[in-house]
Amino acid sequence: MIQRTSAGRGLGVFTTLLGLVAAGCLHQQTRLQSEDDSDRAETKYEIKTIGDVTTVAGVEPLPVGGVGLVVDLDGTGGDAPPGGYRTMLETQLKKEGVQNVREVLASPSTSLVLVSAQIPAGARKGDPIDLEITLPPGSKTTSLRGGYLRKCYLYSYDTTKNLLPTSRGADRPLLGHPLVVAEGRLLVGLGDGDEEARLRRGRIWGGGRCRINRPFELVLNSDKQYASLAAAVADRINHTFHGSFPRSPGDELAVAKNNTHVLLGVPPQYRLNLPRYLRVVRLIPLREAAGAAALAERNAYRQRLEKDLLDPDRCVIAALRLEALGNDTVPALKEGLKSPHALVRFCAAEALAYMNQSAAGEVLADMVEQQPALRAFSLTALASLDEAVCHIKLRELLASPDAETRYGAFRALRALDERDEAVQGELLNDSFWLHKVAPGSPPLVHMTSGRRAEIVLFGEEAYLKPPFQFLAGDFAITADEHDERCTISRFTVNRPPARRQCSLKLEDVLRTLAGLGGGYPEAVELLRQVETCGTATCRVMADALPQAVSVYELVRAGQEIKKREQKGTDLAREEPTEQELLKRDEEIVRSRLDLGATPNLFARDPARRPRLTPEPQAEAAARDRPPPADRAPWRR
Image (tube, rainbow, N blue to C red; front, top):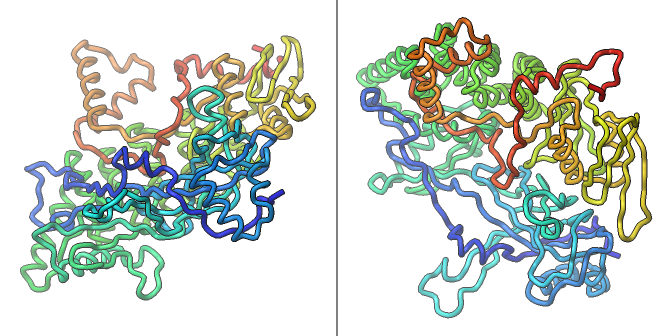
């Protein structure tokens, strides 16, 4: 039997090559255009910026693929089908010194698999990469559940025709470089489709490690392709962000590769908000000319920005441009924190956060709860500023009554410091993380369908309310109406049934499920059924991720406000929460400014399942109220 810990060099193959070629995904060079600064005609500035002479390239993810071997299957594996994939795997296993390769591949406890991933733009060496695991055509494997992917390498790839369109002969795949090392326990059974199909594919969130730095690229416009200009662009970027990130001599943030391309790395404070970073880079003034005239021009530009920062109609772009000027603008941005306008205070605080100024913390924390349209940006800025005030405020937000705020604060605090005791968790069955946070606050259960296998239990204990009968994979979770405990049973083909009892506390149920061999897919399926049937003493939510609000949504919100005003609605007599919400949104709606894309900290997994249907606010609040002290927690 082959051991899963055996090390090996790369197993190269192009796992999704044909599909990618058909979809046109190879060598896409999508570029971000100059609309990112959103300036209207009346707010144009005369200073020439980097964005005026360049476009951003290299924003598409880089596909990589390989062949791997999954071990530890419970008799559901099968012999690898003949063909190129098998030949490559056999060759690699022999190089590793594996004996009896054919017997290993024929074992029902192993399976040849295809491993694919995408390296995002801006990735750094050592970054985690999500993996997708599929079976090749003709595979006899019936299920990948319980499997472990042995260490393998994923390669870049191309085709002869793509590299040389005039080449004769067939379009053959060409092996590139090993860019990702992959290994880990598979998550099987998530996603859509029938049960049989879901068991034949899997994923490993964060199971890969990037082996390269993959910077963005700034491409000089066709009429600006001079070596001196490329060097000037790189110098201006390095000067602007000087001191904001650690580097050794010769390790610059921006490097002029030639007369057409400038390679662009990402400072640590922007790693959670790449869209903002690219906007700021493009707004950096192109040249710092000498002389009295140039100095006067720069001073006039800065004075105009300082004035525009205090105008709610112009503060978004003004703050970005002040941020692009570097640390000299900190005093002006701090003045913005004193504005009576919420949008001005937010824009100033957000810019200060990315400039490592602790003064931003209090304002951003207020915005998280007071301005829903700004929540995703505020939380990301807090997570990007390693100051004591940010740690304190994010911990406080874990107890917020709003689900998106609570989980957003959890993710932000983990990104800021995963060792913070407030977000520490326990890995169950080497499959998923269980976190208990914000004790004493109202209960809430949250799970994710992408990026990380985790279940977060907020606040007071959550319980299951009998009677119920749930099926999740090989597991049955049951309790009769008057039971004080539930029974968890596991039924598998090759093993005798196993049963355990535990309390109705949801934490105990999840721990018992994991103790019997249950993984994240089974835990997620259980929680989905619990929510659908209303069998929990609190809400169960999935993917409550704060998102950017588009300008169109803000306009619609403004139209709703206008309709209410025309109908003569007395806001003072409405519920305080609704009145405050309308007042909060109104100023932001009137700004008519697009605040940017959702930061990558809260980017949704494109393949995620739809969020569970939310409950009406009053109903959810009623469910979250603790039961009377003289009644069992699961009795209502």
